[in-house]
Length: 277
Length: 257
Image 1 (cartoon, one colour):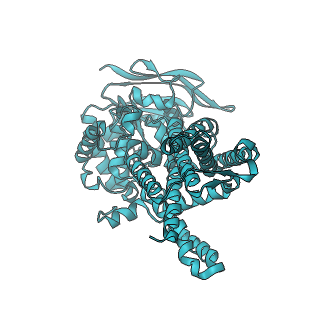
Image 2: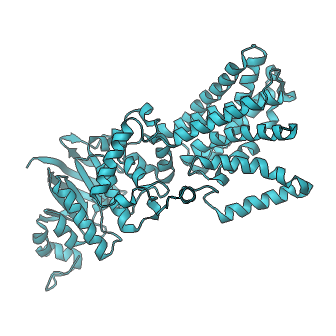
Image 3: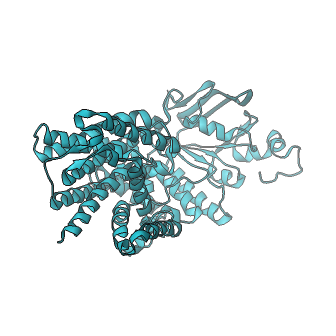
């Protein structure tokens, strides 16, 4: 495999993990625009542990994921009371707070960034993405996954059937936070250098957008969305400066044609030969 | 027959407007009580008070002797209260079977059980139960279909099955006939009669007097938040106060309400 394609596949694998981190809360109707902030926590925590503290790489990465999961649990308890747009704004603020702290924290390099010594190649990163997909498929097929969709559709009704709505949403948000941390820690150890400026709200928005475009109704949506967002700009590379125009036009076209996302439950049932009606 | 459900001295005001003005009612085990009355009489408010959507200003709502008023809405189904909705509230992009399984949430176990795929652990038994109930309701053919793809009348019946999955002590039906055509009403009536024959206690808000007569053994009429009559559906249909509440004056013959 050429270095070019290995590089693309690494980015794809990390984007897939990030997409699932945004998918879990999104399936319950919660827009998390702080995903990049949680990625930054995982990236910095993992890098500091593997670098300054010489932890073995798997432990450092797992600890990075755990740290951002714990932060998501903490932040989620506070901000999940907000709804819709207000929740989006609150998580966006979290993203900026995290970035602001890292930017001014000299122990982790501040504005000049933090070099990461340990290095990861494609295979372990791809394996992690596969693991995350399997975890998402497992959760998607569970009662927990089903209640997320029910909450997204009708919170009041779901509550009347005995579902503890806030606790379920918090669980989705925290698992999503941990997955974002995992994506961040893998990113840090592949690119050997991290800086706060990479983990912007724009990255969070892109991740959420990829999931919405792929479709939140099934476990396949985030995978397709992440692939679309990673590979299409590469396919358009021949068009040089026009490729972003082409890409944006493709996004708008798909949103117009498939407002529920590329992969819907009904489409999936038709594809597998079961009629949705 | 023993009493399973009782409301005592229920009052509720919104701002300065007293919407429920001292309602009492009682339902015995296995009985079907209809709550009827003109638009704005307070039927839906009574339902919302039972559900916990609103909190009453005064009064008690006793299910099997326990007061529901201080209980969080989420916990009431654990105590045996399940309902269907006037405007169908199924999850359109989940299958009929999955929607029905949501009804059994209180029987599904703790957080770890809920993280298992639906066909493992306790989920397996619940799925068997769901399939059994869908079979009995004549909905087996639609089990794997997406709820959003079904006809309105079928969705109404799926909602009833979903509520039954909770194995409720009291089943609340909020205008089961709303939006159904005559043929669909007939099918739903037969279905509910079959469920009633199985001993399920029901409290029904409904406008269609023919439907009420076919399903319920007693009816209670509300007007302006107060009880104005109670009795068998046939007695109610002849009651001058009821006719006046619906039509404003005494007509020569009872018309369908």
